[in-house]
Length: 322
Image (cartoon, rainbow, N blue to C red; front, side):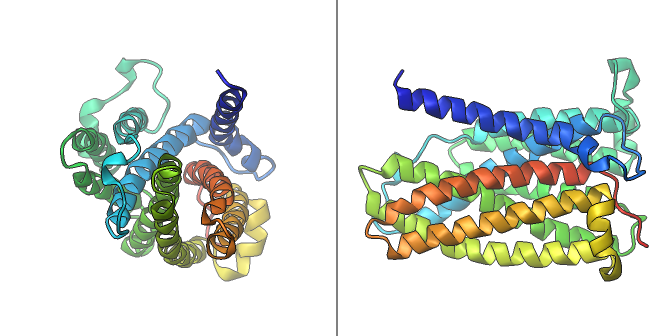
């Protein structure tokens, strides 16, 4: 194995380890000295949600970029990177199954199969949504292995809707508004993160056979990503103000677990936006547009960290409206 291959392997292992440690250890860090109580097994739940979000992003990004590539003349469609969607569906299925087992145990960590009330899943809202996600990942995997992988859009949409409804219980004020904001936010974030990953994989695949088409694809993605970022920012701000009224935001950003996690996510998104601007600048002004690959690669790593932090955000207690 070459030195470059060893370096890439070490880098991948380090990044995966970091992405695993953030949801596992993040909740205990942000909960420290807040006086808030954590749910049982909050670190494990955050890790399962991180895997679920990553699986959705990978598959959504492949479907999204495949559609974008058809708009670039001369793209070698038969030379596309190998799909990661089947593996993503399998990982998402296991994560959704783990989350469903928690719901089946009354939102406690099951210690044995006898602790779980599987039949009870059909009788509660959270249980029905958990089962919907499990089944959607099964369908997603079958679609990914079929001759029409674009059909994954339907189970992906079902998962996004289930996550949006899960995040906003009926006891919340105007839950449908919150679910709508979350649905748009999650969808755009998955397309942004997963789309960039697949674009970079495509650029690497085409670097010798179709570098011009690869640069054109990155440019097209960058234009769409700018719109996605604007929508993500708008929905994120609206969702924040629904949970933390304007007069309390600054205080809660440092005194509550939710606020601290949100602050970390915002800082990461700002870094991602800066990297995206750097990549866009290179794409349009550098003699070789493919030099944009380096900042874009850093951007996708930062987006992976955003996914991990977002998983922590779903696991920590929601702040009380003051």
